[in-house]
Image (cartoon, rainbow over all chains, first blue to last red):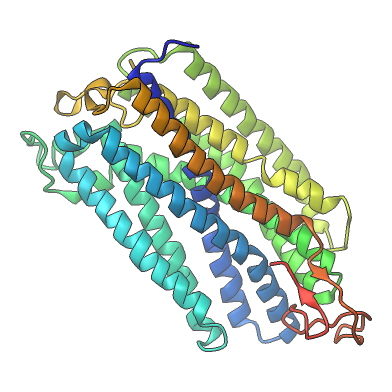
Length: 338
Length: 83
């Protein structure tokens, strides 16, 4: 058995739980805006068959979203519990920015986002379709604000200087949260949000394609229309999201170097190289599949759903791998990797 | 580069290896139950037929065996199981 120190174990624990939580978050962040688009389309269409197709496509993604949302809450609670139990010294030292961002995120994610989602789910046949579309846009917006706050908290731990030095150039003695702008506009946070947005788009695209091929198995005209909608939107999201993920990920490297005083261990470099390779492979695959998916008519197929379901897992490999390898190195709350 | 001179090691508030090992197993186990459970549900839904045909009269789409309403959901003669 390897001789693990408490720090190694704590880092591994954080890396594993953060990695697992992030797999679910990437899905909900990507699928929520797509759900809102589909609902908006259904609300705007006058033709009955088009509206029915979009509603069918929305429903196909909705259960997927809800399942991930529920599991994301469970894994998120474990993550917060771990932060409080294992890393309380960093919280004590750096309390204000972390507390405010985490508290704001909790209010948004648990209160506002869940309320809007509940209203959407309970309002079928009661609210106009346009109002329900607005509710879904609210769900998507609060999800992204919530994610941005968490990323800001993380970025603050990586690059505290921008927050602590304030806009007027003064240096705060100790940590007293007085200015939210540097915290939210931390370059590290902005870069991370862009990277997450691209990854979430790729993940949502993969899920949309998988859901589309499954819906096609109905064999009805409505389901074929829904399948086409899902497959095409998924193909576009995948083809744009996968390369954007690679590009925005590479942009983060220069920032990561600034944060790490000592050289990361060799395994971290190898893990990151593998993650980049997987990202490039996913990009190639998404482009190769793009044309057939755009041309697909929503016909029933026995092998396509299976292939699509398998493909839906692909974006998660680099996501989970990269998250674990990097967090395992830096062991958030990471101040240094050494 | 250090915030308040706190290093990663100093930030750690629990230093018992057995306690950390136990909580790692518990936390990761709970996470795996949630993640794998959720995805098992999803893949089960994606992998099986969207409509389980039940005996019944021809539906609105003209196919015999089950009826599908305009919104894609089955009528009383059929059962949509996905989503």
